[in-house]
Amino acid sequence: MSTNTTDNTRKVTTRRLVEMKQRGEKISMLTAYDYSSAKIIDAAGIDVILVGDSASNVMAGNITTLPITLDQMIYHAKSVMKGTSRALVVVDLPFGTYQGNSKEALASAIRIMKESHAEAVKMEGGSEIRESIERILSAGIPVMGHLGLTPQSINKFGTYSVRARQEEEAAKLIEDAKMLDEIGCFGVVIEKVPAELAARVAKEITIPVIGIGAGGGVDGQVLVMHDMLGINQGFSPRFLRRYADVAGVMTDAVQRYIDDVKSGDFPSPAESY
Ligand code: KIV
Image (cartoon, rainbow, N blue to C red):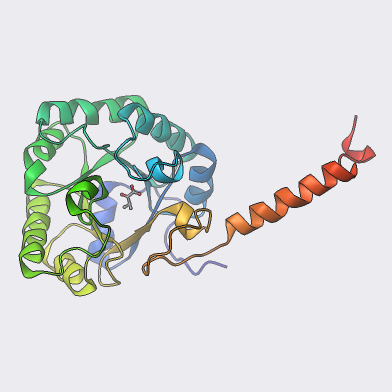
């Protein structure tokens, strides 16, 4: 039984997320990549659905998020939009579609908005991609930032370990978060950094900070749905809380189905025409 007191009927907008931060109401966010899952989590009352480029890992089976294409992200975003009525839907701009060329970045964001009807985009990085973010914002497209561990840069980091433990990297993260706030982003995901640093950022900027592996002192939390439901069993970082064992439920159901087919128990006369 949920103890959630959020208004589960009112449409979530970027503006409403900022109001939630101002009221001290925590923001819930989960990934989804398909119609059926989006429909379930939207009806359950999730505030924000992220069509994350983690689809590259959990849907396509790639080791990193780098291979997923803009066309594939748009396909997932279109499916999610069909299943969503209340949550705000944010779509990741995939690797290679916005870094280094702000005109290409705008063209990529426009394709997502026009073809999927999603409501915002998310982009990894700070000062390095400022021009791209500003160009997208100038077209009226809401942008969410993503700082700390940015999986699209895995080949630069070489590891998925905690970021910004050192003073220099922490200072850059704070500066980047302030910049994202000043230029007009509506929120920022901060991934896998010390809780104290993330809480400080959340206090010092006006837009919501959504954490993943960033402690409880931020304005909301995001997890990859396949991880928190226990569909993806091979990923167990400290920050992940598993709320179900869906892989276990599926395995049991499929094994019982196989047994019933093999034994001739399924279908029964009542399940036949
Ligand atoms: O792609 C994704 O799922 C993400 C979350 C981990 C924040 O960016």
